[in-house]
Length: 381
Image 1 (cartoon, rainbow, N blue to C red):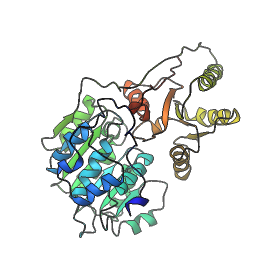
Image 2 (cartoon, rainbow, N blue to C red):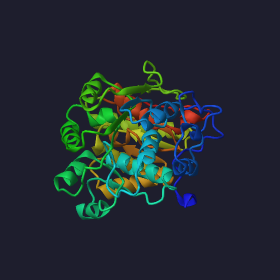
Image 3 (tube, rainbow, N blue to C red):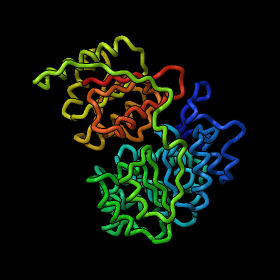
């Protein structure tokens, strides 16, 4: 059974690692006293030894503590809550026991794949994704037996309102990319509503690469004396990455600036060897146009943005992960939590609006954090 499961961990055995993902010598997952099926699943999924954040957070989570886990992108936070969730299940109970919320549909789908990979040896495990763009009728069928529900706030709220999703048995509530979920004008109202519908006696985990003051204010309302798990809160920089910028001449006509940026982009692709690249644009209207330009120049490129249907977005992510494209052009839809192992070049076509978005964007360049070369960034101004 395990052999057919998608590998959730990256193959980093032969790669140089930075110390924020350095494996602890002499310590493996069995030291964390996890159940045998979960240990087998971790091994099958390619997780060999716990990263520093996994080593600190998993034992505390298994003790039932409310946790706020802050760690840089690519350091293993998804494995943390998936392992805690799987180890807490009472499989004889077919009701939902774990609810995981994610800010984008793509992250929700990815979380589901990690749960199923680590849970491949957990007999009878049922985990389903509940996101917009899919028929509610299918959700109703999946909810008949579901131990772990992963979804976007809007669809989860809808299913609870329709009395299709019962929250009575939920014992673990997880907010992945918590800073995005709780930022002003995002999902606050929906999450407040969902939280109020959950049992009072439950455990809560909030995970994020950044920890702004606004997030702290929200989480103190939800959590009971939360334990903070941080590796180095004063050092938010991503190690193992080389960062560069390129100045672009200003022009009163935006399309002229765009054309110059495209020329610099093509020059960069011709001079720097790379496996796959992510190009971030602040405007979704440019993304498809840029994908068409790159494809016409012999660089297979796909576009992903909120303007696409759910099937189109999932197809674009599938092409990236299956190495069917060299370049993915995206808005900030994929700047958070996306696990793309072969990406070793991240380019900001436009400067992000804030430093948190910048950190999340370059955090998608995961593979380079474990190799001997850096991640080159182009920041046209």
